Length: 367
Image (cartoon, rainbow, N blue to C red; front, side, top):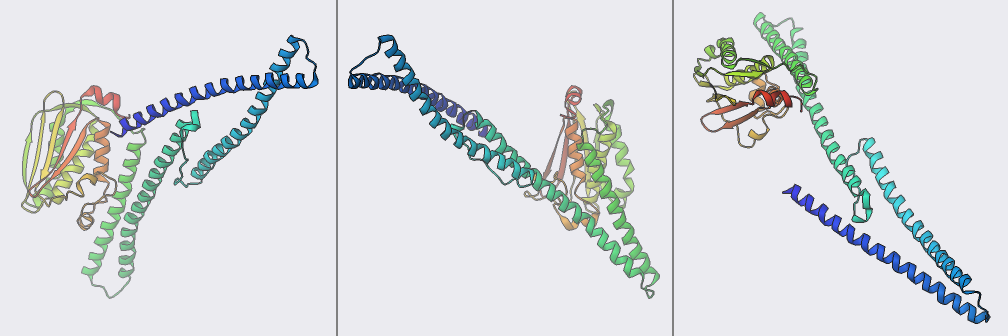
């Protein structure tokens, strides 16, 4: 709808510009006629006053020259006026660009149809200011989130390190504090690793090597790899994996299944159920991973793939998450021209992955 409105506005602006150009042309022609008539009657009055008239050829030449002089004088005055207005317009654009170069993106150049060919330039400058402002806010939010995620474990490590200096601590207390320090150090290491992965994936230089392989075997191996975790929580695993062959980057998709299955185990309740289903129809592969843990609220659901977003801050912190896992999953699925969607209700939370065909993967991996 907004695109249609934009096209309609530009079309109306173009029509108005054409009308103005036509009227301007008629005005110029009318002005030339008036100047010629003025020179004709003015020189006629002068000849009558002097009671002397030059030859007709000379008289016509004087009329033409007089009309051109009047025309030139008028154009010089108008040119000075329009040049002054144009310089103000250019200075406004230059000031806006200089302001953006200093990091202030809260600028806007007033646009009007009289700017002629510069209308699109002004629109581009205003759009650039808006987009750069959004990027700057995202950058500041990213730095703030990283700082927060780093500062929290560092504070814990520093506090418990000082506590270990107390010689009156029991052996059990020392062991407990050391376990906390180790867990916080692991969180820092995991955060650093995820940041590097996300940065590499978004750099458009990350290796992307699709090949044909059995997706169901890959998912099954990941389920078996985290068997100790779901056995410890007495989770019932509902596995239904049809033979599915895809053409994709096996290493990258391995990260996807690791994150999704670990999340399912992490947030499933003890004695809960996790379902992992995979099927294919020759056109696409559909993988659904579900658990019957606490649902994600409707407010949080649209944001769960954003970097550092945590639907339940306390739960994620207790589980050692940093809000980057699903962002990495989303980026990898996008690289494969696939889609991932999340659904959550009172009984189940599900993630559905759909992988595209080989032709689409190869042409749009880094689009």
